[in-house]
Length: 88
Image (cartoon, rainbow, N blue to C red; front, top):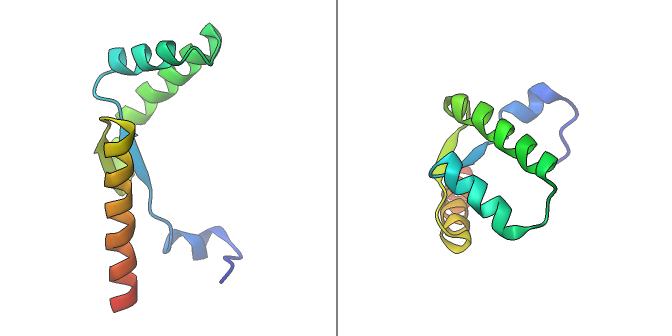
């Protein structure tokens, strides 16, 4: 079932914000990866600051831990929503 417009999508779309424990933690993680330039890291940090201020706009907020724990939390949300949709 393909959504034809934004209004149709709004009722089906759920947003998840994976929030860093702290901005310092995010900064360290980005630098450890060594996959982005300094400019890109600053852009990511600035975006994170803005998103943290707007976290209430998301349907779900997960405080980031490990990659595996983050995955399990997102998976649990997905499965919960899938069960709800089937029951409707």
